[in-house]
Length: 205
Image 1 (cartoon, rainbow, N blue to C red):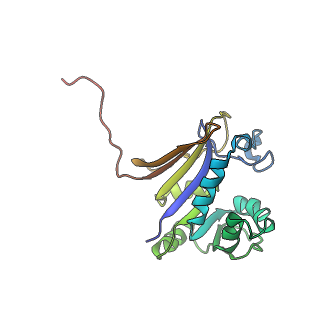
Image 2: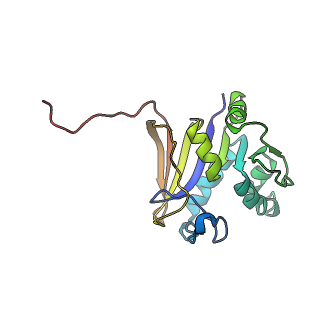
C-alpha cells in the first residue's frame, strides 16, 4: 500500500491560500497572496527537493496543477526538482477538462475518494499532494492522508482558505520530524497515531 503524503504551506493562523503570489488565488477577495515568498532560505529549498524526489506520483487540484505547469516544464531537467516533476506521473482531480500538456499528466478518473484509494492500493513510492486546498479538504474528510508535512510561516493573514476546514475527522497524530529555517518557518511532519489522547486537568473527585 502506498502512502498519501501532503506537503503544504500554512500561515500561523492556518491559512493555505495563495502562498506563492498575489494573483495565485483571489477567491473570496483574498488580498494577501505571496505571503510565503519573503521567508525562503537554502535549507527550505533542500527540504522541498527531498520531499519531491521521494515521490512516486503527484496528485493536484486543477488550480495548483495549472500554476505549476506554467513554471516547471520551462526550468530545464538539469535542475533535479524540475527533472523529477517533469517525469513523474501527475494526476489531476478536476470536474472540468484541464489542459494536460505537462508531460506524464492524466486526469484522475471517477469519484475522487475511490480514485485516490485506487492509487494508494498499488506498490511503490508515496503519492505526493502539493497545495490543492479544495482537493485536500476532500482527502481529509475521507481520512485518506497518511502523512502531513506542514510548513508554518510566521505570518497571520486573518482570513482565507484553511488547511483544516469543517469536516476534518478527529484524529491523533505523531510528530515524526521537525526543522526550523533561519527565517522562522517550522517544517513539521506528522504521521497517523490512532485516536486523540483525551483526558482532563480537573481535580479527581
